[in-house]
Length: 339
Image (cartoon, helix red, strand yellow):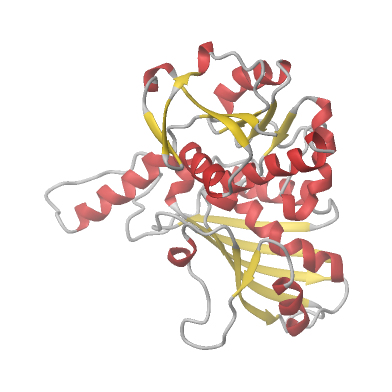
């Protein structure tokens, strides 16, 4: 049996990637509808070897649509997600709007697929933040073995996490470095992003953390275990696509680096590339377009009794957004609709 799927925000970076992934993974859809705002009405987007014309989100009737993948930001989602859910359509939302509401499941399928049952509360499931998604895929199998006590993570997040405007700003500023006649001042970011790094993603909170850092704390607790303590520093770097993270983990029980490597190799969604030689690790450029979360630089932390260091890299437009949403839809079909 095939399903009717709507991609809401089909002209954006994440929406286009959702369409690509639905086609690549041969999602069992009889019909896929591309939805966007009225100003993008009729824009053509690719879905496998087909071309879809976008329809007007404002007038679209979700009745009869089985699943809607939302990638339109919190404000618009606040208007349209309840409308879709009230029509009996499952909403899988990529914005931060619903992530922290206790009756809305926040799901990374490799980590907490069983939480899918919570969809019955409001017909809405939340997709986690891009930086959290790739981290918890690596944390969960290790937590199951040795119980994680504390995580300290520093992120190196690409500009695509800030949307097309972020990518355009990096491109224009990079060109301007070699053409000093044209100055490109920061607009999307608070400082120049070309040939620079910015320790500031999202707004500052009273604690001194940015909201991006707070998200990693709150979401890890909700997805994996509320007892895990997390300290995060989130940094924007001049990379177009692909987030990297340096993760330090302290466990309750000792976990040898070799055993950790074996556990991660056998874990879903992970590829371990960990050779102690030049180039024996994965960088953001190499992960683009891949479904996997890559783990490298696995080594003991000798400053604590039970600690490890990891280097984790993933395509943020895929695992950090579009892929995870499609995987949630697959879990919904397999565990609910086909049950």
